[in-house]
Amino acid sequence: MPPYALRISGLHKVFGRQTAVDRLDLEVPAGSFFGFVGPNGAGKTTTLSMAVGLLRPDGGTATIFGHDVWREPAEAKRLLGVLPDGVALPERLTGREMLTYLGLLRGLDRRVVAERADELLTLLELDGADGTLVADYSTGMRKKVALAAALLHAPRLVVLDEPLEAVDPISAATVKTILRRFVEGGGTVVFSSHVMAVVEQLCDHVAVIGSGRALATGPVSEVTAGISLEDRFVSLVGAPEAASKGLAWLAS
Ligand SMILES: Nc1ncnc2c1ncn2[C@@H]1O[C@H](COP(=O)(O)OP(=O)(O)OP(=O)(O)O)[C@@H](O)[C@H]1O
Image (cartoon, rainbow, N blue to C red; front, side):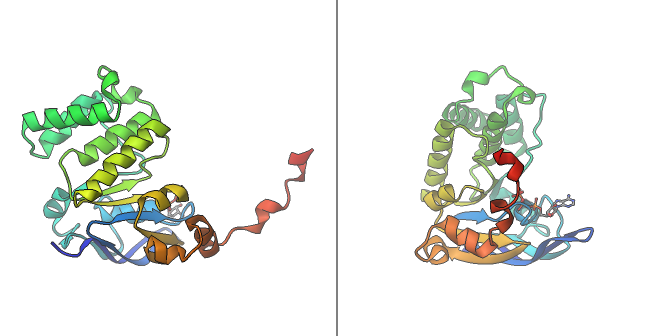
């Protein structure tokens, strides 16, 4: 196995006049729990979308366990599970039908798909919504069923864009346990989050990005260097002073 689950090299994306990702280099060690953080608009979703083969970069490469995601998509995607941002799902299927469909599409045996779908739906407390179409799921339920779809084929790397957003605390605890067990079993997790406490709690590695560039990356203890991740984040990104001024009308 190569030492890196994901290797991003010179990844670049421009939208009109906006450079979303600026020749970004990043290495995610195999077996790591890797947090990807940055302010709104920093380029996290754009980076992750390019890294997993959902958005074509203007330049640079992304390799998954040594397989170029654009040149060897079949090999790379066999090892990869993705929870994308925005989550376009097959709306007219129930959660179970969706997992069955995606599992069979992945080439899994029907019996294996049924067993795994059952286990995931129960763990994520979606089994009670068996007759409900995905179109009628809540935001949190959509996140959970999309996470189940990302894990179904037992990938070696999962890339999750804000997996805990809108997920209730009980389900969030379950998701964290599932992901921890996945990493203990040799899997690699990359996930983006705005919640620094969650990243500090779960991750052993972190990358802080701003304006499409890596501001700091490495083991969490090295990046934080004795202060909280939140304080390090603010010192790297720079908190705007404007919030403490103005808005006098709000205090009236
Ligand atoms: N399809 C698009 N067309 C034009 N601009 C885009 C597009 N997607 C992203 N951008 C721009 O690229 C920049 C990076 O956006 P991106 O969504 O990657 O940031 P992010 O770090 O995921 O933000 P957030 O934390 O708010 O989700 C932003 O300035 C955004 O406006």
